[in-house]
Length: 191
Image 1 (cartoon, rainbow, N blue to C red):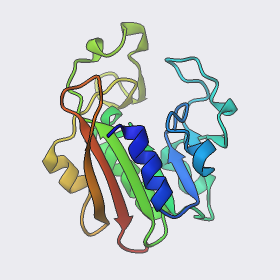
Image 2 (spheres, rainbow, N blue to C red; image 1 turned 90 degrees about the horizontal axis):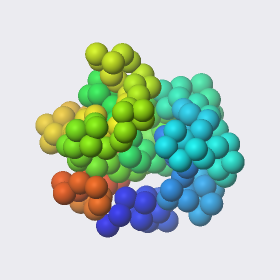
Image 3 (cartoon, rainbow, N blue to C red; image 1 turned 60 degrees about the horizontal axis):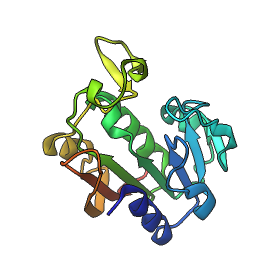
Image 4 (cartoon, rainbow, N blue to C red; image 1 turned 180 degrees about the vertical axis):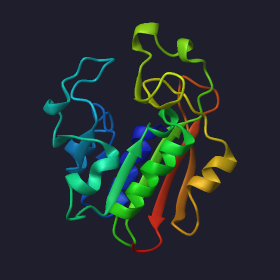
């Protein structure tokens, strides 16, 4: 299954309202099809030139600031697609801890990400390889797929004291033979 189809199918079965985190240009059309709020750090997609404020329900902001941006915790389902492969292990934990605090008890998180082990220069031209958070020597968030999550790292990230895995499926990504994962998680406890 393709990642965007997985996201659409999950939103068709999970309760809203929906928050599509790190949405880029909303390639799964979650704003249009499910009235999701689309949040992204950047105002313009660096690869396509798409002005993201023109995307349906777009809000510019940092995933790690969602508690400030949306203080009323109205969302039942958050979608974080094609993000984890861009971040370090520590930043991935920071983001998922933020989402866990943000969602209500019983809230859902839809995750999709490739297991891409291509070198950075095999993904984009040198002019597109940028560190968005962190430093060149210690990047936390990059424009390229800088992290292939191991099973052990995922087990730690998706700690059973915080999340229950409701569904896990192998996804097809055309740019890597390794495929990737689609997961639906349920928050276990209130903060």
